[in-house]
Image (cartoon, rainbow, N blue to C red):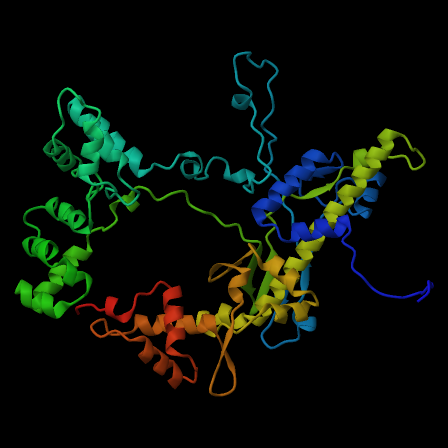
Length: 514
């Protein structure tokens, strides 16, 4: 062994700061991207938002130089496809900006005689960076849904309790019962536990269990009907007792709920008919009344905050072709500030000039990373639409098998990049809004040697169950056999797995009286 010098050639990937930034922006969701852009605007003076849609502004030399350096974050973002055509020939493009114009505030000027005792927000309110409304909308937006606080079940019950006249002793019991109610409207503690907790606080006059029971009966008349119940049977009986006395089949419904609720839960209609001494048509009317009740009364009030999804890609059909374009409202349009860029002097090495030069370089990198993100997202979405045109035309049953490697080979990227692009990114189609990962699914072999998507099999199972006879529902084995008749090889346990994933109960729980 001896020391020697050797010359080798090789390729390696270096994770430069620019590449790290591009990868990080690529995997951000729409909301996270808006926050990242806003943070960049706040920290980098070289970045600014474009306040108008005029592409010809800043026509002076400085403005053109800024755009030549990558200042405008724009791209070609529209593609067309036609079934069975070559993507290189038929997937045309138009110039669609992937950024948007913030809401104008031309009328929101600060008056000269600003009162001293007036808050700033009462006079001037700037549009948020993530807003996508136009000027013509004005105040026509859903103000109540955006600004009102969601009322919880506890708040609704407490409001009724404050309007109910009762003694201080009973009110203390009512508050203890109210604290024990969950989001469904059921009591989570027994009356004995509540009584024991209250008895420790009242040493002079002991509290009786009957008093707690009496307060509970009063609270069970609160809205929504069925709250403060200790189990499902009591919840249904509370709602039945609040119905008008002349309600058809009310007495029979009370009988079934009181004595035969276990048979009803097991759908043992033969035993139920024999023990209740009801005829089949009568039991059908009784069950219709019982099923009209709400087993989870708290869900009527406590519905939580609605979740909204802003699609990253919009797909629409125009003249027989599917058009794929980026949503221009997902992020504000940014550019390099031409005024600050003009302050940079080439031969000056002062601290201020060095700072401006570094900020300009970071601004260019950031805009280029945004462009790379949009180009990659559009490219991947285009290939997905090209592959899943059957789903867009005919629905889930026409979904084709698709895995990450298929798209990775088509766009000549790594699978990890495709995974980042399709995570928390949504596509708006005529059939609804779907996450990009929804279009990827495994495959099952067919008798003809082809492949069938698992998403299509789920749709077929849902269709078969929807068309089954309620009196004799299809078992998992029968569904597997029916799929086999269509040439799809699927085992019974696979049908059970897909059915459970769609939250469809087994056949014994789907049984109904017709």
